[in-house]
Image 1 (cartoon, rainbow, N blue to C red):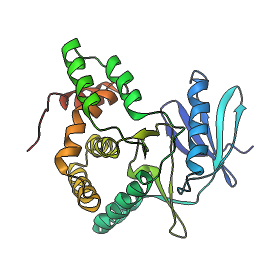
Image 2 (image 1 turned 30 degrees about the horizontal axis):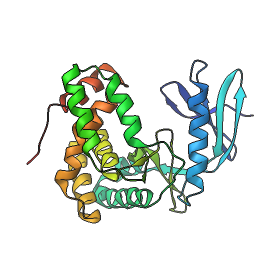
Image 3 (image 1 turned 120 degrees about the vertical axis):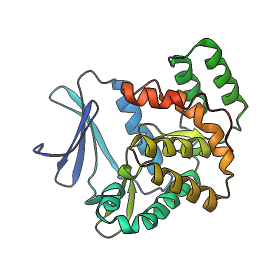
Image 4 (image 1 turned 135 degrees about the horizontal axis):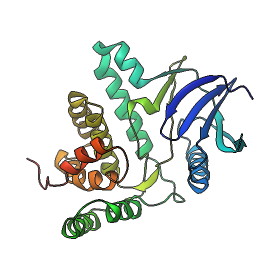
Length: 249
């Protein structure tokens, strides 16, 4: 196996190219259960017919777990936006269309988004009254069974050399309410410092899907709380700042 070419370095994992294969190698202390679950989730998503790289195997390399998948030659939507900012709106339109395609599918074997968010909010660094309020609001939100990527951002969309899109990084996928996933994407734009992109994205999604803006906004404090249990201190502080926002105009 040729491990000389590094494609990406992320928290606790490094992604390599090995010919026509992509090799994601996890740090030695990474949870085996989470790695196997990620591979299983992506295999399940393959069966929905969504455009994703095929899982080719799970193995160990020098004592570390690794997921092998199909290598897609191309650029991410994030790279394309940076290289061609004049067409950012066109890229955002395609981005929203892809997210809506994901959310048009169901996959009954996936974990439920509400269950995951309940666990995360229960772990959040919040006082008991705030946690109770957020959990009550989460319980009151409509329960759906749409595929929710969980980390849908432009850097997780690959556009191949022939123009075909591929959606990567399915480690956080669940089934649940699409608007919760949209709220997560909106906050990801903010975390990346692209506030203008966040607003344009949200308006495009709501227009294309017919979703009321206020409905997505009601999810934002709940999603922010559930995401605040991971990431660095700066990200946590930002996410926690959204939790006091109850209603939007």
